[in-house]
Length: 359
Image (cartoon, rainbow, N blue to C red; front, side, top):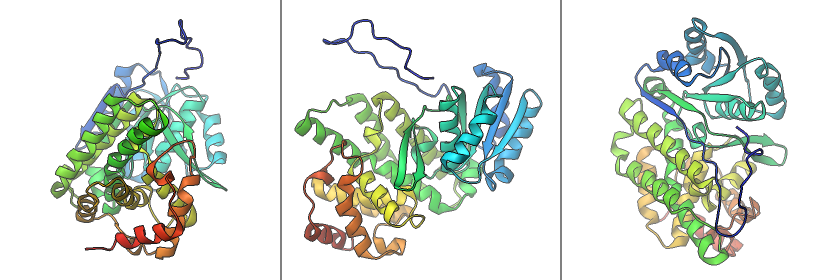
């Protein structure tokens, strides 16, 4: 749970200690919700559970999970209408009575369950109903604040149970957004390597290799990622799990979050609710790959084929807003050095946005 009590016996010099938290059970397939009680029993998490779900996802999957669990566990249900610190604090009060949590829903529900379980020092199981971003597995959670989204520390789920039938039935826009979030691993790794060369930041070669391979495999399988395709849902969920594991190995979100995420967060701040997280980061990935001198057209074509937006126009926003986001991106997580931080002027930002439309 919390690593605060772990003491490194020989601090300094060349010895290092790192605590990696990885999912123990991963169940992906058709009609897997019935496997939830068996997974909980196998993991010996306790006798009482709090199922955190959303108002829509409760009917889609939350109620079924609660009903399945009720035969062997004491079950409480908390409906998170939205994600906010007030909702999180309310859920924490209920979570104190439970041995563990299950998050059933989309990204906001999973993030809520993740933060609550971390603060309450309880394990949690992730049951996603959509594949919109890698938050279903990662050790970070995003919470909207007045000044913009805040990325909070959490822990990865001890298990992931994904029903490909439910995920395939979700709006394809959500799946395409998840794909864009995975493709962004390419430039996130390039940025991390750049920070290593220019700033001496420590990197994890294993995390980079896994993250980059995940992005490459998804791009090779774009033809299988079609609306309402369970095969496509299977590919995307496996990629999201792999991406989350890479972050756990790294001990940070570095292998999945670089300059493209800075741009994405800046864009989301300027136009709240207009773009999905992965969509904004996907456009940022094209720009970042161009700046790195890589094959940005290949990235753009892959995203376009999947159905993700590749220009501000695709999102229904003015190019000028994207320019402002690109200029403001360096102020997002300034401690994280990326190619976006290497002096983008207004003139160069305008040129980069125009580049998105080039043949």
